[in-house]
Image 1: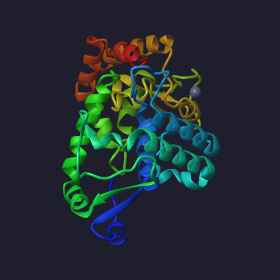
Image 2: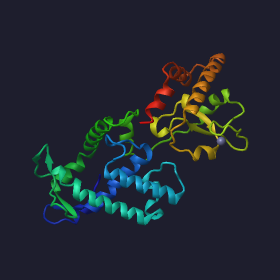
Image 3: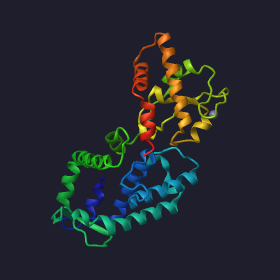
Image 4: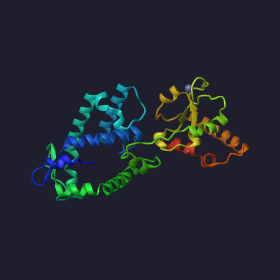
Length: 296
Ligand SMILES: [Zn+2]
């Protein structure tokens, strides 16, 4: 979290007042993005997620309902404050309450011992106070602090998530762009096995448009683009199924497709990085393993 220089100027003495409301907005943004992209578990009981996750999920549902867009979106592109203003304000208020009742005072104690000097918070107050000097140190070391927080956060998430690339998923939330690389380079491979461009999802042929390239096991889970997981689909079939866990029937079809594709590649003498990854995925049964683990 970063605080602007103006916050410092508003202060008197050598303490800075930070409104919980300003913190809540940053917290909401963080949870919104982490949930909409990766939906990681944050507690041992998936039916009883932490209150901040519940608030973020509710807002995501409202946002997707109003905007009609089910694809994950970065906060700064979401325009959420105007798409569903009321719901956004409600979510911020709910987070302020959570910060007041359950969060802000906790960090004043470390392993049961009261710590002095990080910040001061009077229970149920609307803001907390921090020494300017402490705030400056935090700002100057913000990169180190981020890495330390992300490291601990990843360790915590490892208790409840089997999904791959956790630390990358955690780290990426701090970046402006979650890069979804263009998948066009996979087209010619997929086409080798599927020359008539049949849609993997509905089975009909795709003739009047460029086929979309679909991740059978959701991208949000794998956070990677691999030939063994990519198929053609209609644009509309693709966009209506975002992040849905595939059925066993689809997994069987993907496994069979991969075997046929691998044989064709060998026959054509095409043995590059993507093909050797395809071969490895078949040898190690990756499709089925990831399918089983992505179901939680
Ligand atoms: Zn289709």
